[in-house]
Image (tube, rainbow, N blue to C red; front, side, top):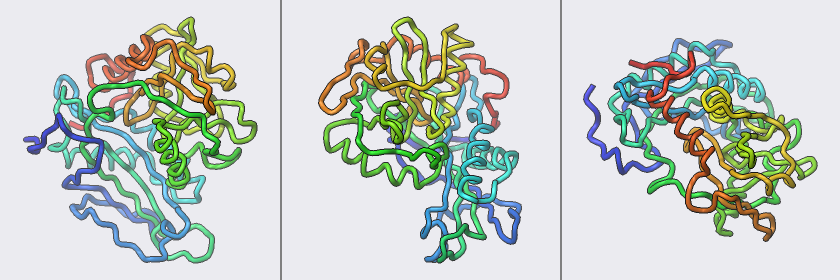
Length: 341
């Protein structure tokens, strides 16, 4: 398929409407057969459950053009499983895993002309999401829902190269114990917006959230998991029931152990330990890994040995290996790549 006439090298990380999206409605206790549509608009009642009580969950993933010209997505089965858990937590009907994967495949295939070419640095971002559609005025789950998948071509998350971030330890809490921090619900991101705007206004790139119960352990940022490297080269990520189970983080742990031969573990990380790490990064779908150069705790600076100019050596190896797998330059573990065409 001939590609769209887009300046792939100058794409930002924003919404560009593509030709098709997938839509399926849940009514009378079951999902309809679903379809692709050219209509990008959603029309719902003013009293819809999503508008009144934030009953919505979503996923974020990407499609890539590999070195040999294939279009692939990365571990969509895990996105389907995570969305299932999110839906259950908000008392929403689960969109079946097999149908989720097929909807993603069909939507990407229909928009193949928008998948950036290999080597452009750009990708096709995929957003599956579900929300309550029927009028709900009492505080209760909706009875009707819509599941959609749209795509948008995006450029690199960091234009002009990766620059290590400066993070602050925030006094805001991201998620309560036994709350919804472990699911990908819109409400979690809404409550983090004031904190991130405040951080930006204070000159910081992101927030480090500590656990809400004791405020002594590292959790995550508003939209990414932390990843640390010890001085002897061990990869460590925080463990908590209120952390989003990042697919990128889980993949990086596997890469560390099975591709790079590194020791890696997921465990509770006391904030007091952060000053002893050699490297720090944020991991997620958008940027894969964003290096952190400095963490500021109420005026006290923790500066990592890797500095403010480049990724640390272990973080860089992790980044290059995982992106190499995603782009087809490095052989992927079985089942990691879903080939579109």
